[in-house]
Image 1 (spheres, rainbow over the protein chains, first blue to last red):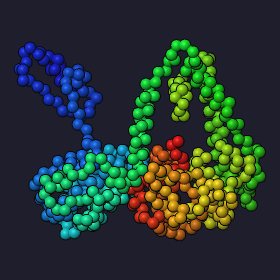
Image 2 (cartoon, rainbow over the protein chains, first blue to last red):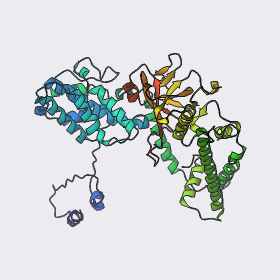
Image 3 (tube, each protein chain N blue to C red):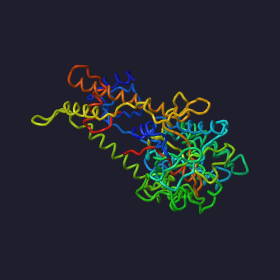
Image 4 (cartoon, helix red, strand yellow):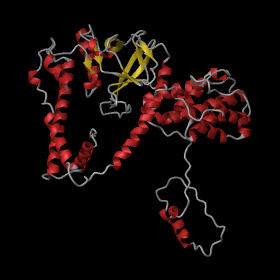
Length: 339
Length: 169
């Protein structure tokens, strides 16, 4: 990389060929020389957004002879469309946040490619379509290998079951509740692409099996990101003239909250049934549990009281302001709950 | 806070407000153990059956004959139909709704509690994801509640339907 930088530095505009252009392609790299980057026109290639764009890309990468080569063309084409749909759907589900996936996974074209090859192999080698084996391979091995949350494993299996099932061979079968999305009847690659072209640009959450309400979650997320950016630009230094400074405001709030903190819970004044002993002389399980919870509550109160007190003193200048205290004061000013 | 102090100073409440707890998993185990000791059954042989009741928190007046009542849950991605007593699709513009009181009834593990039910995951917050802590519990996932549903489980799984102990606001 530094070598490249040197070559680029040595180039002289006056002596080089007028038609000279340098094309570079690179994966994200930390060692990429900045001057080279600064002197060029940058293009980035990002995975397509939206189900339609995703399907289009998948089919754009398919070679005609590959598409027609399977010994069970009807089954292969149907299943391949279902696979492409599955791939696009699980990727697009990520935009809904936690209601889509507990953890947003980075599935890649390689997962799709492997699944595609296996699909082809299984169809070529076996007489029947091995739905069960394919379901397992794709949802638990290929794609599932990335899934670390056990609830997401349940989900990915449910997603694929809708695509890889014997019903998909029926031309009237729909891949979601909507009428628009189905594996097209057996046809040429060009015709399949034409069908994809006819799909709507914006998809309903129903495509992913989600309720239309999921869009609310998605939009809320976007708004939250936006307001957070706006908040970040909020000036922290008070304008001149009148009013309290941000420091004073934070101090007031710290004192106010500290004054409103309830007193620690006192277990000695407990109701007689709460910690009732059983006949064996043991404390009831629920009593033990509430005791533990009370302990946690009292700890929390202690910590809150302590940090609020520290913040008050830090603003006054009697103790050193730490970064965590400063972050807390910042959150107070934004009227948000500190982390 | 008010809930826990009420429990402390005034005795067992008829229904437990789960969001008040730091560690709801512990509560579930304690409730099961309580029953296990009372009836002298091994705790490993017990599980909870989730009976969704036909009233909300205000209606909880009495202790159940066994197990515990819990309330304060929210259902995201679906709603509870009081007439049919089952999980149904959300009404438009209502992504999160209140969930009725649930009676967690201890039953032997040999009982099938899953028939006709959706194993609905129950999380503490809407972030849902959590890390495994040293005790082997997730920091967010509490348990599966088997709630009655007329539709197949896969449908709700794809819907992303889950119970939460608190909403975002």
